[in-house]
Image (cartoon, rainbow over all chains, first blue to last red; front, side, top):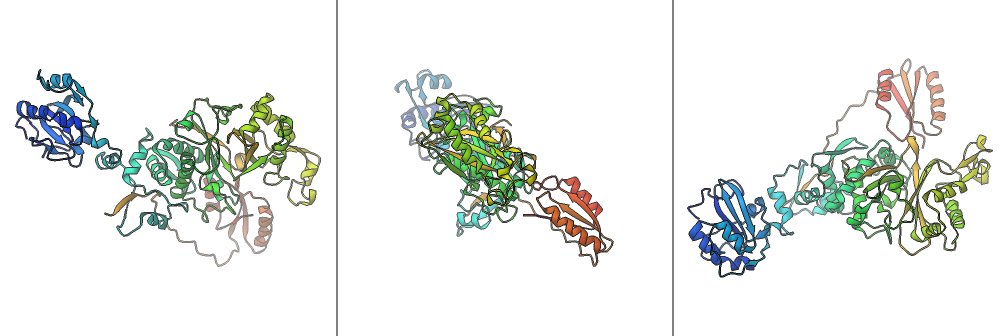
Length: 490
Length: 92
């Protein structure tokens, strides 16, 4: 070690650099190897302190400090090696990285430093930003403020089985929420880990960003998915959406999450082929994370508060993006008062989807007839106004409407007009079915859906004259209402 | 090496409460009947009211605004402060 260094690296606080000149290097870097003669001269003439990241015997002829745990590199934000830093009174005043002869000469005040070397040579990536190491280093050195209870899994224990055993999963394996993974997940939001996102029913427990991140890790999310999970939870945990009732009902509904905005494309959500199916990480993990929070934090588990007679596979995850960038109709989010540039989630208490087939209609009137007839049968052809629905119009069906000049308002008006049903068809006993409306409504015409009860969405693959319907649950103030939230709004 | 993971649950410890002792008789007791607003729940409760009144109980009727949400806290307090026992009708 140089006598010029006023701070002894062996006894200094973690990561603190000694006064004078400091270089961080690694043998694996060709530029570091190239500058070894310069480093040797600086040690002799300027008392340079050298930290080496990989090989403790590098550089040759220099008694370098081995940054074996990369703490010095991590704490000093070293992204490139070699990095040369000038430290005065314990504080960094200047740095350069890679080899730039002019910069090194200026920083060291040695005019002919490295004259025999090229003018410039880029450096290499610091080991402290190696993607394979960075999560562990963040967990080790960032002074974790995470508050969740630590659960130790024994050597002989299978991590995945241990999480099943604790009842933390939805029936599928989950990713182990290690501190490194959770800290990485938290880089996806600007919100503090201890910020409260919502009060989660049924147990009415405050959920923090940290707990959301833990469950998002388990669900398989990437950090960029986290703001969408947070927004969806904010929407789900409102009195209007009423997740308590959605859980407790014997009907087969769960939160259906519809995503809008340019962010859906940034995070790679699917709004096209197989939009409601398997295969897209963002769609599946965002919806799954929401459900895991309801299970693990809210305490909403099947057979306990969740009393569904059948449930539906979408209760694992039901999340998709509207194909709003190339839609001939106004998007759901814009219809609900947001801007087309906003990232928005809308949650809806819905059952599984089913298909509307009409491969022959090229006339919008005929297609509307088919759609209305299918919508009429939702839940029971004789039950009216009790449930809302999402109608997902496939692109080929949307084109039939668009070619005829029908916009969102026209499509909805035409559907509602076709769904006015004479009371005599609906009263209890009519058509040999017990279900229906009371007899005194015999002479009244009733709408299948309340005003605003059909939510139009444009999504699906480009081929196929199909649309899809997702039936809802008890609507309005007595049940659940669709709720929208802007992503990253809070 | 043993791995360490973070607890995804709410980490709550549930409070355990002992159940109120079963009254030896309902004669003279205030018995609350809570209608959750589910269809035909009132049919069941109307019949119970007749039977309980005949048996000597003082019946009080209550109703939740909607069956889909928990009873409001004020309603729960009202029942707890006015009744010795309560019967809640589920109608599914």
